Amino acid sequence: MLLVYSHKITPRLKYVFKQICTRILGIPVSFTSTIEEFIAHDSMKMSYTNQALGKEFFVKSHSILFEQGLSDIDIVIHDWEGSKCFFQNPENSRLPFDIFSAAFYLLSRYEEYLPHVKDEYGRFNASDSLAFKHDFLHQPVVDIWAYKFKDALQKQYPDYQFTDRTYTVKPIIDVPMAFYFVQKGLLRTIGGTLSDIGRFKFRQLYQRYLVLFRFKRDPYNTFKWIINKQKQFKHKFVVFFLIGDYSTYDKNINLNKKKFVALIKSVADYCQVGLKASYFALEDLKILKKEKRKMEGVINTSLEASRNSFTKLNLPHSYRNLIELEIKEDYTMGYINASGFRAGTCTPFLFYDMDYEIQTPLIVNSFHLMDFALLKHASLLDKKGELLQIIDQIKKVKGTFVPVFHNYSFSGIDQWKGFKELFNIILESTDEN
Image 1 (cartoon, helix red, strand yellow):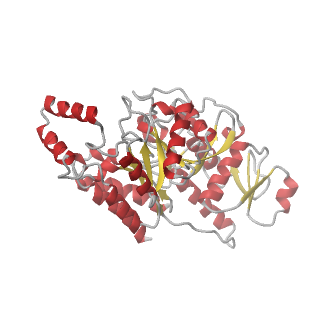
Image 2: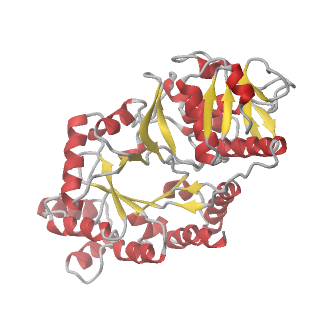
């Protein structure tokens, strides 16, 4: 066990030390502000305060973990052994940076509480993030810092037996529209037909009626392939179905359709099924509660995971609604058009509510790559290159890779050619451990 001495034990301090020490490094940690207790401790210990007590393992603390609310923090980014860091420390500190304060800044999404310009859907842009501006979005810096901390501790305590973790993959399948042509009802089918004619999409019109007359499988119906892949993979896929009412933003199949319900049930036999919260449910707790109840009625068990439509996330309100409904895990944290680490980590973490200054029970699983982010590359080779770079970064710290694909990513049509192969690369990456 690691005993941490500090002049003040705050919720922020306990939160970030438990994330770095226990969840990433597997080291149990406890805290004290009593010097006598600290001196008497005969195992691993460190002081985290303004000045060292003696010759112990000491990291000088930044003020952010002892504050409440938000403040105007001056952040200066420095290079540090192949990575970046901030909150620099003086020479007598065992670490040249206060990695705990820096990690809290990233994990709490401090910058997303500050005034910022949102995009057309009300989202925080990757380009506005500290990580993007200073070119470390592509690295799980919190995990990298944690391992640097572990190396420093090992030098001080060579007899302590540290545990190790293994690289894992948690694939996400997003289903905003289960079928492209079928199960849409007469009016939507007529509307789609007229739209194809009006836009001179005669090839699509031909495909539409091949599918409608059952000469061909619906291109979005890739679920047999997904289930077969799940059977070959030891870790559960998490498949998120949109079941909200039809609207300008959400255009999935009506849950009254028996074939759609049967599809969700069949997928739930093999994969974990979660709720893709509709666009209007993101701002309305009553709608979200209704969708949660509907999904639980289909899967006949309590709903544990959710993900927001359009990857829209408004902190802290989006997460407070999930906590209110006792949803345990969220998979929204990430960027649609940029691969990388929005919260600076590839380890699941608990949401910290900055307004209430409490650690909540909601587990945030930040995703690191969405299929859309790869579309900026014209060639499959370049897509593979970016994918392998992300995998390599996560493997270095033995973290959990969370990629987001869609059911139509595996259709093989148009821009999605080669995405089955990319998904296979992800699944096979665990074989090399």
